Length: 273
Image (cartoon, rainbow, N blue to C red):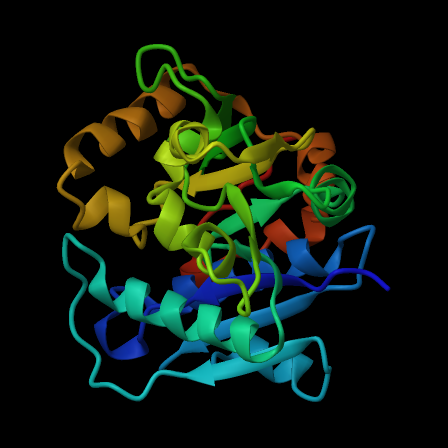
């Protein structure tokens, strides 16, 4: 029997979203990317104040669970408190279901179609989780992309910038924190490899890639984060030096040209032939 694999998606509230149609459009692309997994035995947990229209298409599918946020929505803060509370809801649901592999996934990022298969193969009994060190930054406005590291913008690996880059094994009955709550033990995604070394535990490096969508106008790190100014430098670098997004790269994330050809708000397509 396969170990359960959960994608946990925290979604901003409609009342405080700057552009709700864009938020819904981006979430739709993320869900399509998840649904394209070659290993489709997955669960998707969406923590949100509002049920987005795209979610109506999966109601009744047992793989999808909506977790309602019951507090008053507040505008995004530098600490992203709302996102943190929604991640807690997700983690509690995973614990209530007996644990498993948990990947937090931002509602505007894409995953390679082999991610779940790679994670299940790489995270063995003595491995506590994994990081994804390779990926692409894709600019939503220009349709240009660069792989990590991005010289002149961010000279580090993918997981050191993007939060949608870690998978943790949650074992709710374990007595030690590293097993019962690995996210608390290992800290922020960019610290995972160093933190795991300090704890003396093993993490796998997944032989796959992720996509980090930038320039959407909805990304917390580019708007409210204390480091927003240099996050925007990365966007500028991708727009200046990036290559046009190709159909072959899009297919790697389980998407196709038709899915990108019509965007919310009448914005131009991401795809460039």
